[in-house]
Length: 222
Image (cartoon, rainbow, N blue to C red):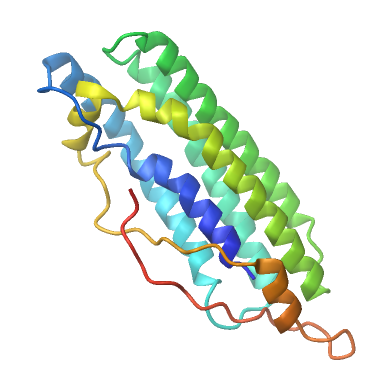
């Protein structure tokens, strides 16, 4: 039942994990300097985001008590909120990227990260309020959280694509802090609500553990 949540979360994390790979001409000193400045600050936050995703993945396979899923997801959202706030600060501290409309691109990207931080804090609050005594309702709650995550990913995509455009994107690709990971989990969305309905125990039996969710094949995120 946590599978759809992870799919949306990984889509959002990709925005940060793939801060590289944009085309453009040969790198300039200004682009390289900017890339190093921002990627040095991005690297520790990227690791926190990866760790948060891993923790959610850890409760998506096998049988886990709803309370364990809830506490794990809550802690992950708190960590993600802090990481995205730090990313916003990193964008501001790095200054405007040396591209056309760089100041506006910087401002937009920082705002997107700030918004993401606030959204993750809100999702933590939502997860904290989920009722784990009814497994079906708990699964429905996670499905709603996943929908919010998908919206969050879409709203952040445009600003980040602009931040990593042209020579700046090419320069970022050279920096360890912004390079693509060798692999990152890509989990296909599933009908979480219907799956929960088919696997959740009846009310008479009670809900003691969450349904098992099989993990999809790991693929490289773009």
